[in-house]
Length: 129
Image 1: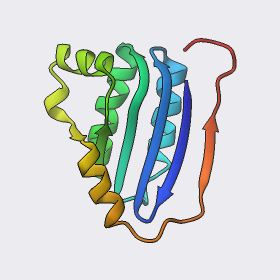
Image 2: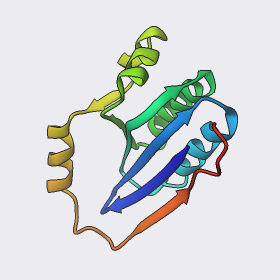
Image 3: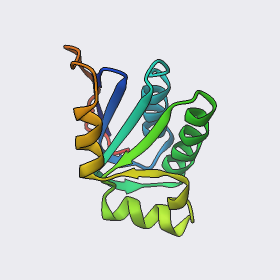
Image 4: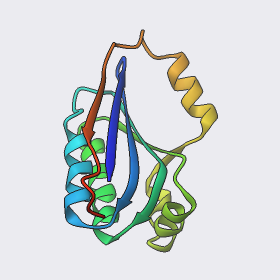
């Protein structure tokens, strides 16, 4: 799994690519999100996630609770069809705020001036997670 992060004002956008099916990938996602404790909004871009295992689903549920405790809005952006299916089967889709493209454009329009920050959190190592 690959993670990329952009910080735009008080909003952090974490782009996820690949599979979130085993603990190492799920823990990288958890660590990336929880490192953004100063953000007011955290958006997980799940467009390029093509597999979500039990550990990944558990981490998403944990992150939703963590965000609520820290008064952070956690939004899922453009979950792939597979991620939607997994969330729906687990009856978890109603627990998450799903941000549409329109929602994202509005968030970006109301964000502060973008900070010059782009960080590659992790990259594929040739192993499938």
